[in-house]
Length: 265
Image 1 (cartoon, helix red, strand yellow):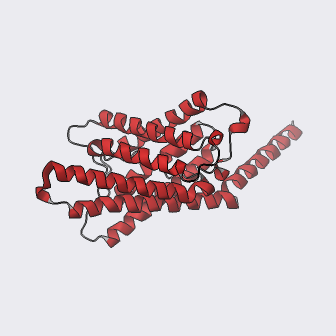
Image 2: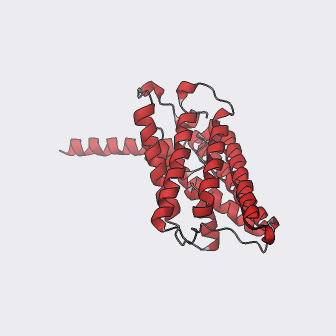
Image 3: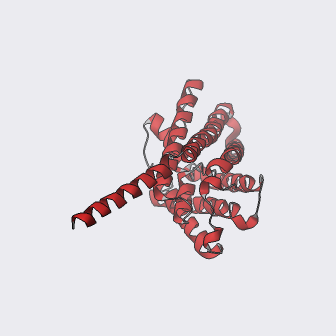
């Protein structure tokens, strides 16, 4: 009995060390840092564009001015996401979004513990970006994740779910190894779908489709009203998209799965 207990203890200890090695190896730490930097780039440019557009918008422009504001901010987010994914894809997979990480976890490309570390890095990158924006744009409000007055919590959640589903499904297709080398095609497609969805969902939910993008402003302003909408909708949408693509669109063989750290979008 003692031999069995000692053997079980040693086996558990060995498994624990393997997990720690996986989580904190040089390549893993490099991946987390890449996610931190890429999320910082995305939030700093995207949120910064929203602040800048709000400053330059003419109050008397009416509906036309509001439409131009949405278009400009959507394009800025699309360009920023393209750059963020492109700069980190070969290092971490270019998630830049906890919902994308959830989709890859559900698809079996990323372990749960690694996914948690990715998400923490993304949340930190978003928060630091918002702190710097507060310092660099004194007197300007950080736009929080507010729902439109006529949008309910469930309606906002459904909107974020659908928008994030489309985004993460595109990410899964862009990183599919059957497509071969993509260059900038994958990041371009991801940026395009995000920008298009932002133009649709922006007036209703803020168009986040990314819990990290909504967490930073909430953390620095302390405004967490309806914040759950920007977690439940995107996380559920990303997870479902990962499952759908992996179960229905992927070839399903083990040789098709590539390590996320080595995958290039």
